[in-house]
Image 1 (tube, helix red, strand yellow):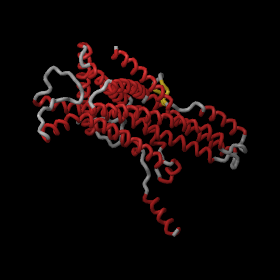
Image 2: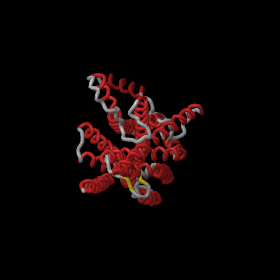
Image 3: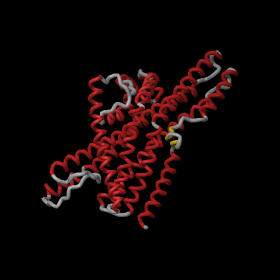
Length: 412
């Protein structure tokens, strides 16, 4: 029986293929391509393809900002006239989300050359053969990241299209199926335009425009988050591999020169990872700050909207909206915490490995590595915030303070 299982396991191992680096980046690339954007230069992108994608990108950005402008005008008019206060606060949540999406898209576009360098460096570090990938536990890391990503963008897609298609489904059910022709034409988001959008073809064009704008905003937001999480996952994988490699080394079995060569290679590898971590933190610093700022803003206004009451269908969508904002915060904070833990583990691995019989120079150099590992790699939301799981509790406290202030203003 054992003799039969062994060849079968060996055959399954032979059928496996090495995992390319693009497997970690495929979800982010998919959403960026949906808005016609390339976050970094790729070898398979031709000139004609890039021109077509750029035209699509410009058209979608023009439409997104036109929808944003119409929503902002509506809020100013509603607040100025003192009417539709609840609708204005609901629109503020959407406006905050769209502004953040706009900023993240523009920022990643400006960081394209730097992102290309980071991806190129990770490709150099990425093991190509299957036997080289096994010590990295690469399949485990890829499966974990894929589960996070599918849940993340699946939840947001459900939120987006439940909200965007609500009035279209309501119209089809009431007008065509039930024959109740009392349907009042509504758009997914409150807006102001200098013509009557509820009549004729204008309503359908406005509806399509807002749907496309919403999808473009979501794609830009989700792609930036998933790209950052993919790069952090790869960094964590390399940090853990370096830790294991150091822990398995037994110093003193070979010549002191060989031990020093091993340590030199480990230090060089560690330094490359630290520089990559710093680059990723600087590239995504502005998007991270936008994420946490907008999440506090959204949770505050959506929470206020839920407490003042409303229709059950609106409340369900608001609950889904605030749940998505919290999932986004927890996902980013979780990956940031994993990076902190993995980079800190380098110092522990140095201490745990068998260094007792090593040369004196070797043991002295270990002190420098441990000291450097005590300053873990972090994701920073610019200079204002170090991202970790502790950040989530701070964010919730800030959101509650704004919510209490808004609730007091409304009651008075």
